[in-house]
View (cartoon, rainbow over the protein chains, first blue to last red):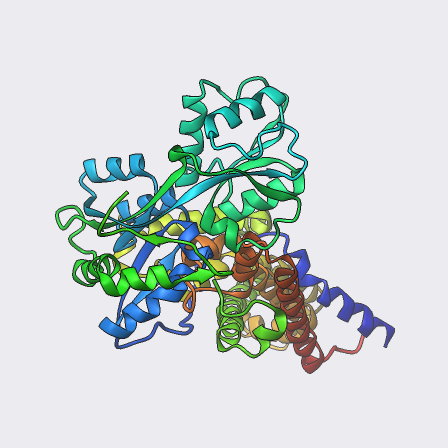
Length: 288
Length: 225
């Protein structure tokens, strides 16, 4: 009997051991399918529109209208564009003007349209060691943070937020990676991971407002800088070029682009609120 | 994003049970396939002597440490529409996740299955041959004789698959309602700062895997020893 319990205990420990493994060839299985009988398109998007709950709130309305189901991948702007470039998505929704331009210039995308905007904010510890809270100048705040050697968390993941952060450092004339007292911490993760890290390290970080509002672990953090024109955050939908991506589901993807930029989609975006706040301001008619 | 914000919401939500169901069906099918291939392979490696046998045994053991994220990435590049197997249209599907997890479980099942078969073949091999069994017949016989360690091998494979997130988040894409599993949900909820919910889901996952492993163990029974 004793042996049996010992064996049982050893087995119970197995899942957590999960030491590692892998290798050659093998099988497959056929687990649950997608909603069959329906067209399904794959949308590669930035994390913020997904993690904030926006897409989950509005896409069912699109599916109801058109019968087209949307699979959402939300890896961040850089990876979303890469995914589409490799032919693994049918449409993208991202927020990094420079990376988008390159995607268009390379012949991957066509018909970029802004669907909504909000803004980026600089968040930091409530005790504000760099004394930047309350300002409206992101560049000056970064300069002060670098001067104080206050901990700063960078996404470091080629996301739209990361790209803006790097542009702001450049505009401030600072190379944060030099100096080496580890105040600048490149965590190589998503927005949520960066906010978790900033909360744990009592560090500053740049966040989009949508993710910040929907984030539930902000205890030691607060908004320190907002309202700088340089912190404008634009979300664009880009269709794929039929020349470079003839196999993509271009027609239903086009319907999604149309829906997002016309009154039904625009109203759905504007109606999405979290804690009473409008997270994304529809702007297809008047792009920012 | 999920339609449940707390663990008690989760139990009443269809989405949650869909996530649980997908986790179990992907991991069980992957580990079952790994067992169906790996246990006979492990037994065969103990029974037959042929050139290269040692190399396969070493490879199976060496690959016990293969990183899931690397398997996921390699499979991603293979299954991508710009990769060699893109035409199969498997990327970002549950099938791709099962393949990744099966690849991760196979060396574990093979290496542990081989170890179990080796001992029993040393003890009973001559007797089996004297009784006139062929080596082909000896494979299922050895597995049956060593069924307790063989089950442990299969459960180790299941433990590997059900707890894994690095590979499936790459080849599955964590698509809500389609390729979102328990482990990728935990990653997502952690990213959204819902740490208590993420931890609660983790405990549910541990509870489920524990019940499955214990259940399999008890049902199979242990040989007298």
